[in-house]
Amino acid sequence: MTTAFVKAFIPIEITDVRFISSTILEPAAGEPIFSIGGTYNEFDQVSVVSANSHLLYESLIDTNTGNDPTTPPATPPIPWKLKSYTNRYRMFEYNNGLPSTGASPLTTVIRPGTRINAISLLGVRASTASLTVQDGIGGPVVFSLNQDLLARHAMTPYEIAFAPFVYDNVVTAFDVPPVIDPVVTMTLTDSSGTCDIGRFAVGMAADMGEVDWGSVREDENYSSITYEAGFAKFDPVPSIPVLELPIEIDTVRVNRARQFKEQANGKAVVWSAMNGIDTLREMHVLIGPYQRFRFSTLNHRLAKIDLTIKGI
Image 1: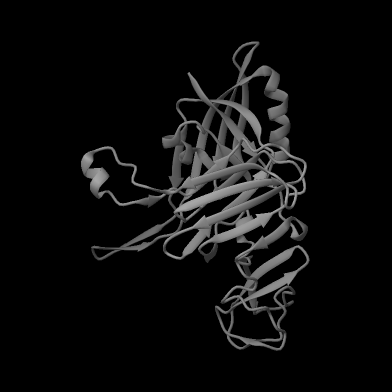
Image 2 (image 1 turned 90 degrees about the vertical axis):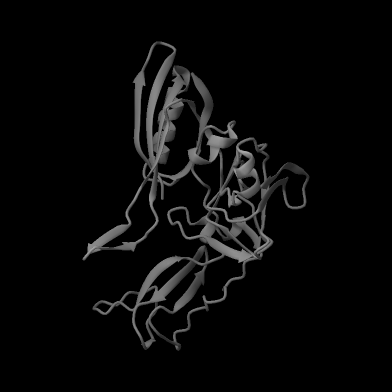
């Protein structure tokens, strides 16, 4: 028995020309623009911004003077390490899990420059999220979505009364009208005064087929635990999510799925399934490269895809 199509898309790179505005300032507090005449100490961070490049570096040494972060020295010591994109652009760094953080309401506007039919927000920490798509700057609104992200997920009267609210951290839309010049506005709000967004991804999603019951979501735990003299010392680090999807696909769609596989090889891809089931949707949304993308035939009409994705 099948339940929903598996959707997948390669996020469009958001270059300077595709970025319209954001309430997150650049440089952000704690990310001053690098000065060749400045002196930096270990752990100090600086921004280096140029055309289509918004990078954050961290100093590895004290009294760090006259060392350009973008030009590594020929001999040790190495004075700088590349940490991530700047705070404003981290939401578009699809191979890194560090979020963009900004004051509520946090609003970012992009203009992808090509048709899209899908939007995904991942790693969200906010109580509300809204998405609006216009056809051109100042054009008509063709799509809007408003979603409350604080929930109790309660079943019993006791849970309804006392269970703590938690954040749902995924927002997806796969029914965006593919207009010629989409302009996408994302707004997050939270009563704490601060919002986080891990990834803000848009693209043209393809149908991979229908996922069967029996999908598996697990997390690979890389945190270390050291046992000494009856005590346990924990060193927690983020776990890595893994999603296994058994998919049935019409044979007429197989070549299209194979072409997508070739395009997605070695790339961060947004994958989503169970979109019609609210309680299961979030566990079936992941960004990362595929680890296994195996085709097999069932009969002249149906084929099977065994898909394994490892999150990033």
